Length: 406
Image 1 (cartoon, rainbow, N blue to C red):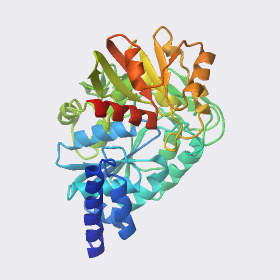
Image 2: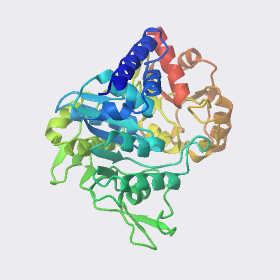
Image 3: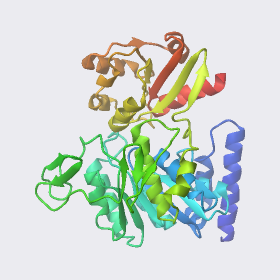
């Protein structure tokens, strides 16, 4: 690397280490921020010489990135932004910290995908899904699909691994010459009733979908989830054993296997490594405290809340909502979530916007109890499992409380 890039890398690593030592976080943002201030081209310099996979989408990218990095580890050391810092500052910090590795798997915020493709020249880009997020901080989904489509059109040499079940993803990826399709299912379909190509209605039946006014339709996937396993392009079925809960993570594993296969990793080699992944940046972590087994689930938008309800056991459940900058200040998205799966279980609510959540649960006819602190929540449920579902900053608040005690 040029001397300036070497200096920037050294300073980035030092700043990140100081941040961790001071207890100010993992340093994955500040290190990259300082490094890019010294050398604005630092990310490109650090990416040079590595075979890189980028993973983007509205939901599931942190988990899929962790699984893909584990799978790719069959071939050698892999740099990755394992704490979920998914903007260029986080990518820069992750690559600087990792040093010289032949491979990297980076989670990328969907807004930044075009820029990161330009700067890292990846071998593979995985596109998971597009669904509504908080509109005060996220673009409308059709705009995002157009951004992806334009970005990929400018890089025809990039291999794309894309979700055949999401019409917006298919439309964004279909112009690429090298696409591998996977099918992991799409439970949330409320953002893809209209064709992004023609504006006509999209119809669905038996897992298939098609536009009623143009040729856009679901492509045949080379990788697909079947029962508790994944079928590969040869037609071989592989049992997937994970420590992570829910059928959605079988789909994330299928995506990770498809990404790894682009690097020559066979499923039989990758699957044992996927089985070692137990928690991703605290997500799905289980902590025992005062006779309660507490499991943490992150949910940030309607689609991810739907998946969280699917993962959660029929047990007392604590819901926590904040509305700080990383969460989005507008909580009206709560009305897009169907809370009916919470019927017939004790429900507790907390967080800075607990009253917003209380009104929403009243509308859904879900009985609940408001608790002011996490300690009060623990005392309010009997010994056994306590499921905790929280959005970004509420999740981090509870995780910090558990770390402090344990």
